[in-house]
Length: 149
Length: 149
DNA sequence: TATTGTTATACTCTATAACTATA
DNA sequence: TATAGTTATAGAGTATAACAATA
Image 1 (cartoon, rainbow over the protein chains, first blue to last red):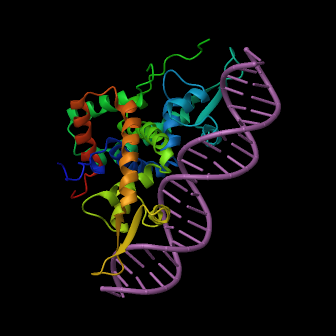
Image 2: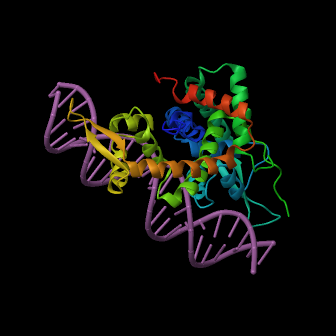
Image 3: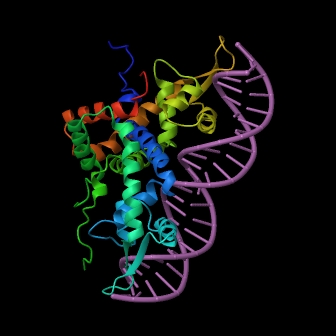
């Protein structure tokens, strides 16, 4: 006979909960570091993608950032009004607009990236280099498990 | 037709970005699993804490979930109106209200937990048991690095 | 007919200040 | 004076449907 209460995994051992709490902490730290550049995590991420070698369309950018296509419009509007990124129409398919960072956008991103890295360093300071590598690999497995990336 | 080259941005090696994307995926999956019980990740988390051995006050619950104390009120209002949790005033300090799950709350949580676990299983299915353990430890280090928990 | 970017809208989440009752 | 819970409110984030231009 088993009258003991069913063993119940506590919330603190729940992966989803820990990811949610870690996200709250890291995004808060990143936003504080990015504030001086007029950026937030989302606009910073869009700018980062626009600075990459293989630039993406708005649709692809939205998918990569887990945003709805409609959400990305105002973010790009803001970045474009500050001459940090440009919407470049594709001449193969004129519906598609490729995101490309301007020189000013790249310059700002270089500075913003340092600030973001510094802010994140506080959050991850307890982890050794090999632990961060391992965490990176595990998270990539989750974040892109359905993706071909 | 595939106009876009496979995106390989540096952002994909950013721990904060990966945590944010993983959170988006896991919370989406959890919310879909919890919907049938009239719960979301946040109300589920509050109910989970109310079911634990050492119950918390509203203030402590909010801190644990990285919520503002004001945000927790409506969540508890909802759970209490459905007779899933009770606000129990502390007789030592009558300002404090301890959160306690009712029998109905525990019963619902038992079912909801199974659904949440099933939904999360899809997200973490690529990870072996030892990888999940390692991820858990690493995330705990980040999520509670300033905490005494 | 389907897709890209866009607009509009509504809903949820987050952050802040101020209030009440207790200490 | 300080703290726990609460209220009100505004701003940020998220989700959905519909539209014009293009394929």
